[in-house]
Image (cartoon, rainbow, N blue to C red; front, side, top):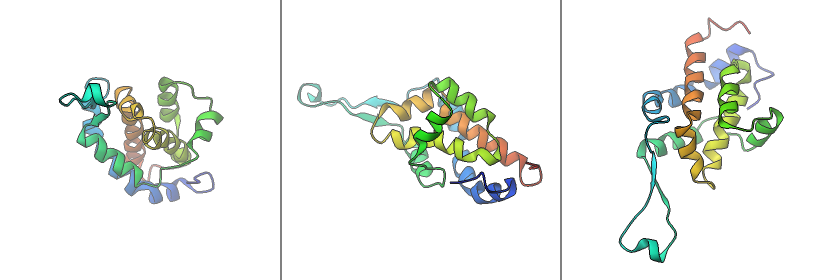
Length: 155
């Protein structure tokens, strides 16, 4: 996803449908961010003695992850966005997302990718992204850019 060589209108047209897919989860993210657990460890009869625990996720979170994975925002090189911008905490990532414009949508995709793709191997990342409001901030940025629309873009 290279947006630096495109006009704001081209970026908007190309990514609008993906933004809309994820904006559908805005009410759920607003409800769950920082307030409710979206994962728990499976506890069955005698399972603690015989095996390691594994997380059980909220169904809506899993649908959000699946939708996000199907978008153009997924970037396996997301680490470059994180390191290039020296982002070290969730608060820095949220502030970074807030500051991005339509032409920097690839940076927002990098942060989203960190949590969506990274959550495949580090199970705590999905819950952390909801709890700390990172997914919420990303979806709010998409809503803000969508509200600007093609007519409000002058970059």
